[in-house]
Length: 87
Image 1 (cartoon, rainbow, N blue to C red):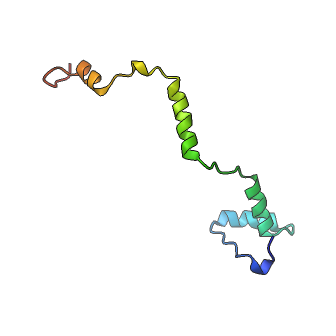
Image 2 (cartoon, rainbow, N blue to C red; image 1 turned 90 degrees about the vertical axis):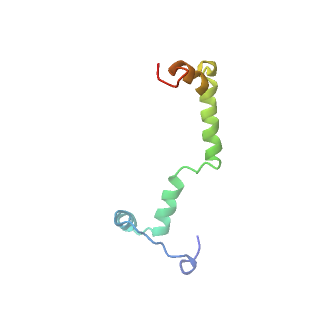
Image 3 (cartoon, helix red, strand yellow; image 1 turned 45 degrees about the vertical axis):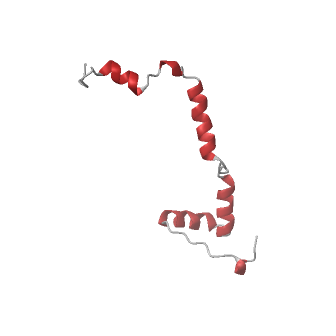
């Protein structure tokens, strides 16, 4: 932890958060200690969230029988006649 004079000030924009912070610091703990403890409890952010989500979707799609999915051309042939009118 840095000495108090070298730390940037903490700006709290939410009244609700400010009230909770006052309650949590009333026992003598500093704002920085309370905030650091809250941050330590949060899960670590996923570094490659997009890639991880894409892998999850691909895993789901691998379980789907893709041979039963029609192309738009096949769908149009079933749903519309030669003049483009619905069947």
